[in-house]
Image 1: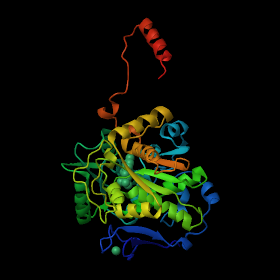
Image 2 (image 1 turned 180 degrees about the vertical axis):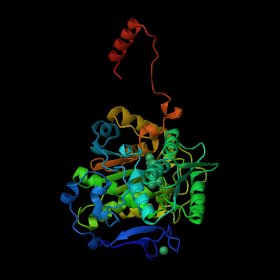
Image 3 (image 1 turned 120 degrees about the vertical axis):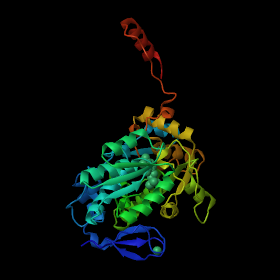
Image 4 (image 1 turned 30 degrees about the horizontal axis):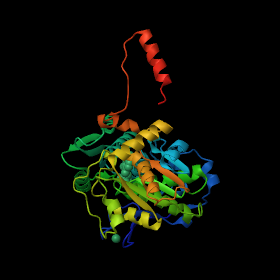
Length: 411
Ligand SMILES: *Cc1c(COP(=O)(O)O)cnc(C)c1O
Ligand SMILES: [Zn+2]
């Protein structure tokens, strides 16, 4: 039997695995813990005999058996070696883990398969979340698969159209709030507990159990531990989840090195980066977060204490990038490597470029950028602006001349 429980990251009080709780009685964040001795035989050979998705690493997931597992075949995303992108930003050995290849187009699916499976185990009558878009899309899809009612609350006018469409098409009840994401999360959290809906924001520690598999896959694919793992940071869950994955691999003997975790935020929404850089004792929220990267447009990240531990324990780095730097990185990823990502996902690449230029990051080490979501999520006019297309009349002569001209141009 696997021994699994929930534990406060601050006072280390423990709670049963099947108690619904989003914070410790002391107010601290909860983490899912497992007695690593109780997991049975864990080895790369065993993992690699299975299909390449989140469930390949079943021994390290907090469930006993596979029955009633809700899955859309999430995870198993490509790790691309990017030589041209490396040249552009001055790195020697650069990889992109492309999370846009998940079923709903973002890494959120890694966590939702676990979160919804847990919701069913707990007998929840419904699930809910606040979202900047991707959590809503993912929760909606997994709720549909599981056949459980789903309510998502998004900040009105601040969600990428593709994400909103996903949530509606998958059949979630979509509620648009006249307010920010941070306000939405506060409200949903409070009300969900009152009406008995299971909250599946990243404050829910079970979701992070799925998201930690990005670390397993990265080592599985690379065959070694990279020097740096860079991620965009919004509510601070994913960087903490990835770090938990590395720590657990180390604890069970699958790896014997650690990467440095690198957290990137946007200039207009950088409370976590400021916290680390200025060595503040507590997070100073950003009341009106603003950035083109809507997935990380968050001013009051709930998981900041977990993310801070991740950066500190891993001897990590942080950086903030401008919207222009994000758009530039998005265009370079696409035009040099054929990797289409949404703005938040491009922030990891923009941040790595900045950290190499400043000399804070060792350009000779292996760098993995986690590119968290697909470009198809967000075709907003400001992202298309400046990209080219040409109109032509249906005249063969014109079209021939045009093609000849276009082929003769260098780029
Ligand atoms: C959710 C999300 C993030 C931020 O992850 P956190 O866990 O909130 O820090 C980054 N990029 C994309 C595309 C996302 O959907
Ligand atoms: Zn506590």
